[in-house]
Length: 163
Ligand SMILES: CC(C)(COP(=O)(O)OP(=O)(O)OC[C@H]1O[C@@H](n2cnc3c(N)ncnc32)[C@H](O)[C@@H]1OP(=O)(O)O)[C@@H](O)C(=O)NCCC(=O)NCCS
Image 1 (cartoon, protein in one colour):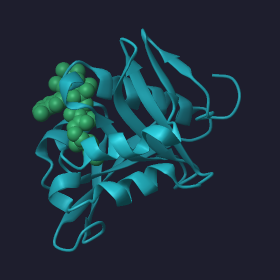
Image 2 (cartoon, rainbow, N blue to C red):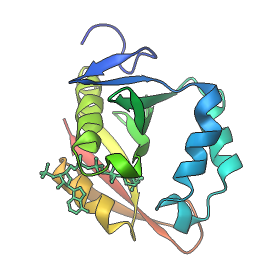
Image 3 (tube, helix red, strand yellow):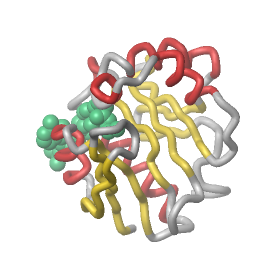
Image 4 (cartoon, rainbow, N blue to C red):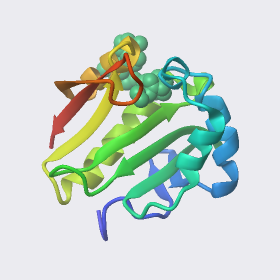
């Protein structure tokens, strides 16, 4: 890797491409995310999620994964965070799940992070069994339970991958 980690520019990952999220697509992507867990169960509203995706935040790198030329996923990474970056949002769109794209984004983030850090962090809702299994498969260890972090009544699980 050359330059700063998580540079806001297009990055080739295999035959796919991660490129910066465009403000104009935040509303439509948020509209999809709120129909999926964890956001659906946690009670996210599309307009609030769209504002989060679009707002000015120099420490949050936001990318869209394009596969076959079409948007297939979203990755948002907060860096710096805690002796390593934090994957704040990771989603593969429904039609594209289960074909390795989630792993590809995580491995890319780990490669970027490894240039400067020895940790990569993420969080997952305790009820999101599928994502917990996924994060386990891509090298994360469950580190702490954080009650009521996002929505009252729901636990989040802090995940750490040593790099
Ligand atoms: C969780 C998510 C990011 C996984 O991405 P994906 O592209 O579907 O997963 P991949 O195809 O890259 O799978 C990577 C590994 O995880 C495993 N995995 C994926 N889903 C799994 C499941 N439901 N149960 C068990 N293992 C699973 C795969 O078997 C694979 O393991 P392997 O390569 O060792 O065989 C995706 O399903 C998603 O966006 N879900 C909705 C949003 C969400 O939960 N985001 C994460 C928490 S905020």
